[in-house]
Amino acid sequence: MRKPLSRTIVWLNGAFGVGKTQTAFELHSRIPGSFVFDPEQIGFALRKVVPPSMHRDFQDYPVWREFTYQSLRYVAENFAGEIIVPMTVVNPLYYDQTVGMLRKEGFPVHHFTLLASRNTVLRRLRRRGDGSNSWGAAQLDRCIKSLSDERFSVHLNTQGKAIEAVAEEIANYVGLDLKPPTWHPILRPLKRIIVQVGHIRF
Image 1: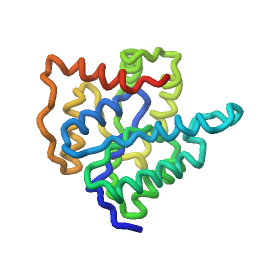
Image 2: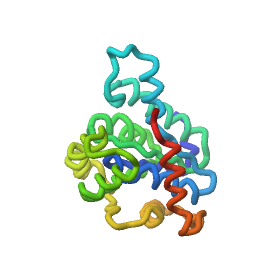
Image 3: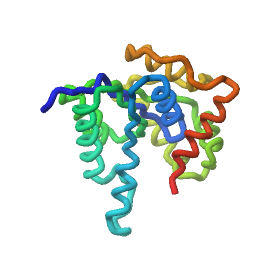
C-alpha cells in the first residue's frame, strides 16, 4: 500500500438532516486546498447501472462499500489536502467496511457523529423541504439509536450551534487551521440555500 498523501480525512456522520453537508462545505470553504468526497454519488451511479428489481438502499450493495473504501483510499494516496466526507453510516458492519478499513490500513480518518434532538432534526429536515413522512424522517429513530453507540464517536452535539461553530469545533479537535468565514453574517443564510440547492437529488 502506498503511504497516504492526504493530511487527514474528516468523516461527518449523523442522522439525515442533522447538518453534515452544510458542515462539510463550511469546512471546505475555510480549509484551503480541501476536497469534499461524496459517497452518495457512488450510490446514485450504482442505481443507474443495476436492474430496477435490484434497487434498494445503496449502502446495502456490498460493491458500494467496496467502491467507497477503494475510492477514498485512491484519493487519499494521491491528494495532498484534507478530505471531507459527509455520509450517514449507521450499520456497524458497513462502518467497519469503510471507516474501519481505512483506519486499519493507516489512513488518518477522524470520524465525527453530529447529534441533535429528534425535534431539532425534524425541524432541519422540514427547513430543507423534507416533511415528517420523508425517507430521512423515517430513518431518524434508527439513526439515533445506532449512532449513540461508542463505536460511532466522536459524538458532537450541534444543538443550538451555528454551522460555523460546529465546523470550528471539529477543526479544533483535529488540529486544523480555518480561515475566517468567507460570507458576511447577513449573507450566510443565502450560502446555506446555495449548498442545499446544489444537493437536491432528482
